[in-house]
Length: 334
Image 1 (cartoon, rainbow, N blue to C red):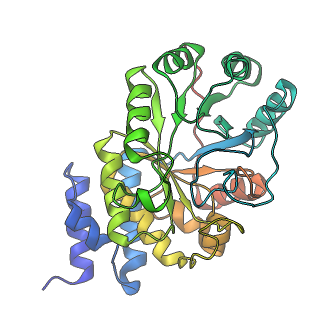
Image 2 (image 1 turned 45 degrees about the vertical axis):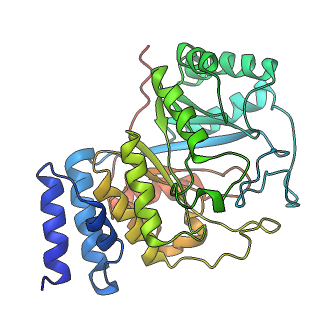
């Protein structure tokens, strides 16, 4: 019987040689023993080094329209179905958004993501303002612009592409087999159609999800292979930070080592993807946050999140420096 070291080497060599791990391989990877976890992380990082290089991609977000969302995602502070005490406001002023973009650029972010609560973009004035802001931020701030805008029409996707958007962000949140436990007001199929429409318009899609929603280890593997099936090359991995008032407020926290094994599994399944650690990393990984980057990941979301506080970006830049990692630079080519 192969020991843990031999199995990890076999999976690693397969990927480094241009092969692919199977779903059964991934189910074993995510169940690597505590004793072999640090070795697994080192080998996941070898894969990252070969296919992605040393640069770390930093991004930042702004909650441009907050609260009163009609969707019932059970993890979300902004859902109108739950009493969470979240701030509710309409679309922020251009001045405030440009100020946030400049702050993101000064903090080291390579791209800036405009996020709006709600199912989609039914307010024509807001959408026109978003299109205008994309160009202004690119020109005046010198940073890439991404958007997380809910469900879009084909025409809206085409206009976003023309405006100069770098990526559309649309998480699938979890595995297809578990999605109904997370949200009932839209489906995984709705997500897939939205992502396909963006890709058809020529927009690269940033798509990941949240672990710790109550899914099984096998469902995390299922999620990774769903992203692979959808040809996703930018994957934000969040870890649930339970919000009082939501149905998932009492979810049991994951251990840092389980989180890191899950992250490593995503690297084995998606060896060439930009995989970033995002919401919940401070609360859940705590002192082990650098191990995410030393364990296969090559991106970090910096600054505050939608409704919770993040780290001081200076601490994240220090973490990159201490790890000997460089940063990516904005690509503002037309």
